[in-house]
Image (cartoon, rainbow, N blue to C red):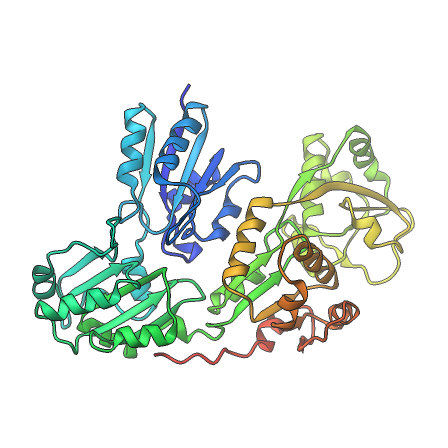
Length: 486
C-alpha cells in the first residue's frame, strides 16, 4: 500500500512562519526530506523516530540531484511511508514542486502541496520594506536570479520588466547582480533606482545592504554578502529607513549558542529569539521511557513514601504518566513533594501539586525520580532512586546544528547550568570542530556562580555571570549588539 507525500513550504526562515498545516504534516511524518533553507529548528517538531534525509544544495554542490530526490520520494511512499518534503519558502516559487509532484502523479502516489510564505515577500518585510504601497508601487514581480543554463544568467524580457513593473524581487541573484543591474539600466530603469539585498531574511543572522542600481554591486562586494539572498529593486526600498523593525530588536545581530542538557524544550531559546538573536540550541536530546515491571511496582508502592523528589520537569511527566497508566489514584499519595528547580516546581504546579525546593539533604524515607544519570549527579541523595527515562542524542538535529555552527560561528555562548558546561564540551569534542577555538572566540555567559565555577574548572574565564540562574537575569545581562541600518 502506497503512503503519502506532503510537499511542505517551510517558510522563509523564522521557524514560527511555517503554517499550521505544514507543522501538522511534519509531526506525522515517518520520513523527513529537508533542504538547506528550511530552518533546522523545525526538525524538533518531527518524531525523533522519523528517518531524516538531508538534500541541501549549495552553489555547484548538490547533496542529492533533483532526479534522485524525485526517485527517493516515490520509493519511500511506495514503502507505505508518510513523507514530509520540507522546502524553504513556498514550494511553488522556484521550489521545483511541479517536478516532484509530476513524478509522484506519474507513479500514482497520493500527495498534498502545503503552501508556505515565500521569501520574496517575507524577507523585505523583515527588512522594513513592503513589496507594494499606494505611493511607491502597485505592481510586483518575482524573478529568478539565475537559471540552470551554462552561464547561469536569467533569460528575461528585460524591457518589459524594467519599464512595466514597479518592484522586482530577484531570488538567489548575488553572482549575477552586475548582469541584473546593467540590463535594468540598459532597458530604461534609472541608475538611481533604490536596491536592497537581504541575506538570510527573517533569521536572526539577517543582513541588509542598500544602494542603487549604480552602486549596489560594489556595496554588496564590500559587505561580502552571499546567497541565500533576495534582491529587491524599486523606489519602495526607501521605506526601509522609516519602518525597519526586525533589525532594531535588542539582541539583533547576536549569534548565540545555547548549551542544552535536557530533552524537554525550554523557554530560554524562544525568549532570545523574540529579542532578535540568532539562536542555536546544542546538543539536543530525545527522552525514551526506561520503565520495567520492577519500576512500575516501585511506583505503585510510592503511596507508602514520606517524600517524592522530582529532579527534572521531565521526571514529573514520566512518573504521573506511569501512575495513570496503572489506574492509580493520585489522592492516595501521602508524600511531601520536592523539586530541584523552579521549572520542575512549576511543572508540578500545573498539575495542582505544591512542591518545595529542596536545598538540603534528601529526605530519608522517600523516592528520588529522574533520568538514568540523576543518581550519579546527586550522590548526596540517600533515598531510593528510580530512573524513569534515558536521554539519547537527536543525531540528525545535532548534525544540522553542527553545519550551522560551521557556517555561522557564534559570538556568544550561554551556559544555563554547571552541567551544561561538560555536556556542551563533550558534544563538541565528538565532532571535527575546534572546541577551544569555538569557546575562546565567543563571549561566555554563565548563569549563576556555580556555572561560572564550572567553566573556570574547564580552563576558561567567564565574561558575564548573571546575578541568578533566571531568564530575566540573563536577558538583563546581554547588551544589545551594535548593529546599524545600512
